[in-house]
Length: 156
Image (tube, rainbow, N blue to C red; front, side, top):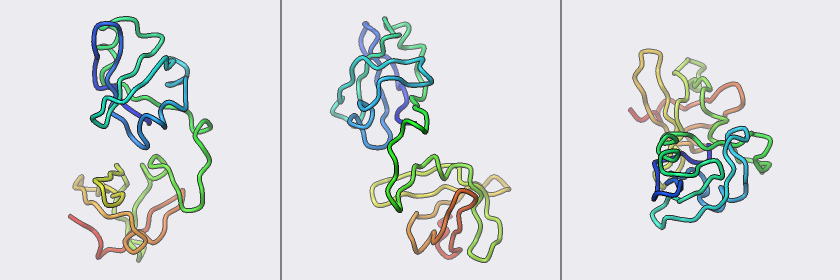
């Protein structure tokens, strides 16, 4: 997911976007979104960390308001290749988390970043959640099957 539509902007069909990832520059690399249902005509920064966009299929405020909450996505095949040590947040979502001794801890339900580093949010089987920094010390290993977490780094 590159962005989410936060609401309408003006009366001509523009939308306000909440951006994820690298901002307007990352979004403007693409023209077609959501399996071809949205075609980007133009996008600009709102100077507040978000963006204002126009999609060819959205012609008035009513259409724009109907899209509130819509996630703006592209297919995995369209995304740039990754360097060693890089990952997409979506690679981690849904992975089971286990302790460094192999005990199940739950599933990764979110990846957040509040400025210092990425943080994994893990939902335990009982529904409670905990967060752990995505650092080599706290999460020494992960792959397409699981995330290994060093227990003393679990932040509850």
